[in-house]
Amino acid sequence: MIVETKAKPNTDDIDEHIKRMEKLRTYADLHNDTRKYFGAIAGVVMNDSEKKYALKKGFYVIEPSGETFNITEPEGTGKPKAW
Image (cartoon, rainbow, N blue to C red; front, side, top):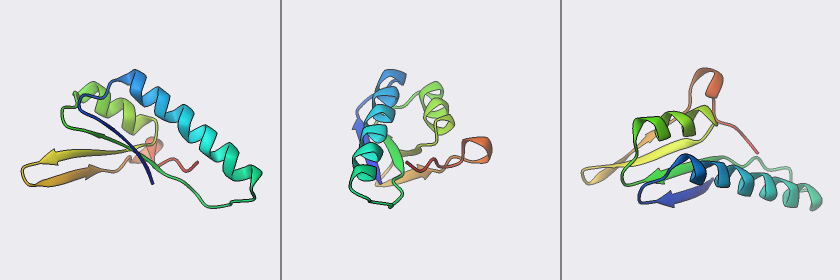
């Protein structure tokens, strides 16, 4: 799993993470690496719109919750995307 961590992630950060995931997949394919890579966006402060956007793009969303973390998995049409 490849995680992008930001204090306040926005949609531009999510789009950049998609580009990095695509580059990683291209590199892996060149080296006959057939593993599947999943992505996640971790943020200390995340608005609902950014959270929904990340989930729609197939990323897991990681947010702090007290002394632990909540991990939200994309569901339905936005199921976890494998690169």
